[in-house]
Image (cartoon, rainbow, N blue to C red; front, side, top):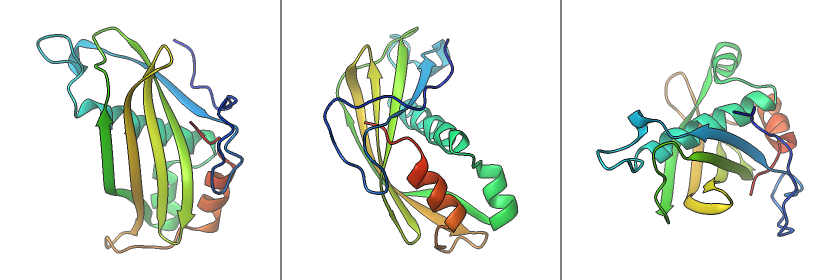
Amino acid sequence: MAEPRTAERRTDGAQAAGGTGADVHVFPLRVYYEDTDAGGVVYHANYLRFAERARSEMLRAAGVTNVELMAREGLAFTIRRCEVDFLKPARLDDVLEVHTRVLALKGARVEAEQVVRRDGDDLARLKLEIACIDRAGRPARLPAVLTGALAAAPQAG
């Protein structure tokens, strides 16, 4: 399977806060047996796992890792809010793509959207509010290194 693609043109001309909206971070993955129920359909909670992997890889592509963020800044991310629309099922052995876009960077929050796709068809859409927290679990302002990396990171669609 190919490596994650980190710059792909959007065709809808949408704009993203903190970025051009013209680029997309795409994380490819394959559906394995462990991801499915007895009928070979992806279990609903696994879409959250796929989305988490895609966000981590988007950060990595921007030059920041979760491990470094905790070690150097004492900061981590937690999901404050997540809305998921399940549109079509993914099945065993499907090749999927998770498209991630940062919508806004606000103080201690990142607003993002993610779309899980198969062959260009949307299977699930996620809207997320991600909080940046310190070691004590309190909200913490996004550090400049992170806001710079996220603003420069490819914006998905």
